[in-house]
Image (tube, rainbow, N blue to C red; front, side, top):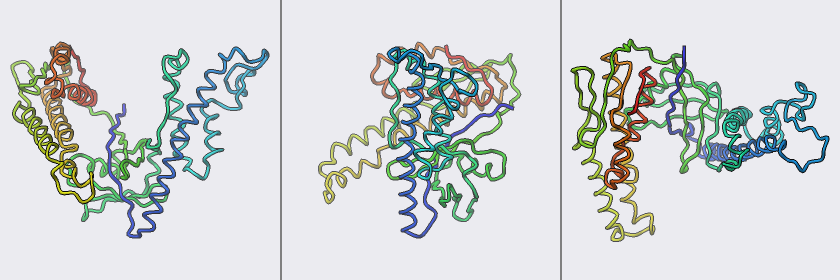
Length: 363
């Protein structure tokens, strides 16, 4: 059965009451992340050289120019495959500094992405990628061990490369808890996931692998949906019609958040000092991501209700009518372009439709 993958961002804390151990563990993870970006740059550099060496016309004649494994090709100049060649480089430089599982997965992932873009590198249409220090560290799902739910405290604990960690899920009502429970039950499994330090916080980018959902859908049933400012979503299947969301709850609420932020921003110079800029701008932190989070939540709800409606009436095809014309018109309207988040809504609909096995057509 075909598999699909879901990725969720989960904040992590070091599961220990020993301050020195927490400090040491964070330092270890920071060292891994620093080594990881160096690994990534080395992989791309060596892969690029191997790809370009056959075009180095200034090399002396007689040199072997086939960048292949010598054991498989008599004219090959490599002692192993191209993937294994960069793995050997990483082992030589980072063995003992970085868990081998991390640089092995990193190598496999980057060699694959390089192969997809190598034609653009070859023609000079794109420069070689440059990786930064805050990049995420990939690891196999099997490395996450002893996953346990602590019911009384509503968090999960596990170990990763010998470091005890626990989740911080807050009061959100998303599906992260249920997904982790499914992993414990064995219904879902963890695929290659990522560990990342961001803004002094530690995050797990967990990738959950599950079977594609199978719904009883009829090819004769077609759903037609329309996106607009007045009503975020309007969908019709035959004589059945559903309006999802309205202008008051989406647009007006979004404008209210923008206006509140502007008021706080205009008066922040009059705030009490104490720690300079940071203290004066403290009220702005409340609004830092409020609009983004509100819009993200609403779009998730709208897209979920749309797909559930299609599944309920067994619609195998979903058509977004007039969407391309609306997007072109929105580019000429500053207000609409700023507050019309239906590009993101379209992406969420496409993802959920694919997950449910519904064919999406954008007109």
